[in-house]
Length: 100
Image (tube, rainbow, N blue to C red; front, side, top):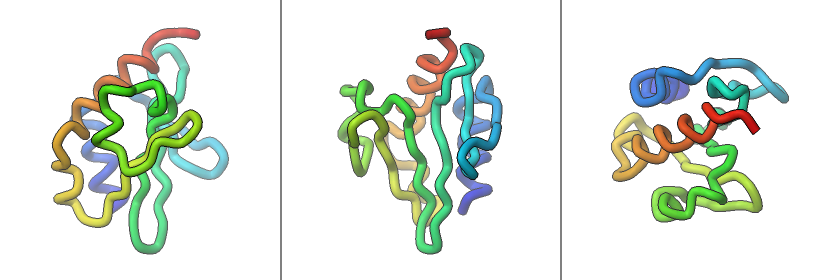
């Protein structure tokens, strides 16, 4: 499942660069900001949106909105077809392209 998520990220946000931080794969924008991360668990892969709490228009897409991040639980490749997920990823990539 983790590889399917990586393919999805490359397809919908090709400008993000993969790096490892805190033991997790993070995908960083041109502005060197973290856009999303992958947290592979035994039963699912969590796709985390670093600034997801600010992405109010996509809160209905996320499974959880925490203080700063928002997360989506992915258990099978079909979950990547969730309505609005690709658009949320593109928006996160655009946010990460801007320097703070």
